Image (tube, rainbow, N blue to C red; front, side, top):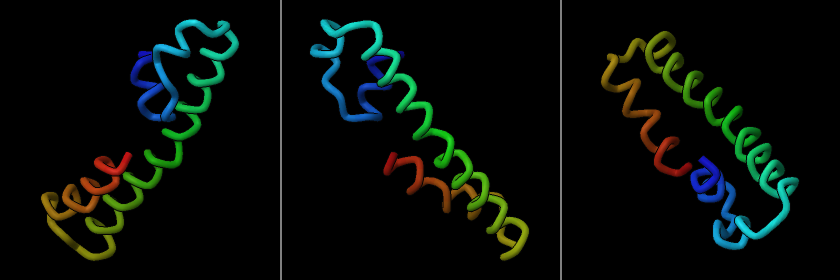
Length: 71
């Protein structure tokens, strides 16, 4: 999981493995904080297309694909 967190935050995994446990906790916390607005953005985009614009399920999912890919 730490490797995935490093990918999200842009930190070097090999360098982080030699760092202190506090550094590992910090990277984990930063990655978690990044996920919160992304999840809210995905849910909001899906609900906006489905409810407000009266789009289909497929079009609502297609709105969220760029958000997921950019992450």
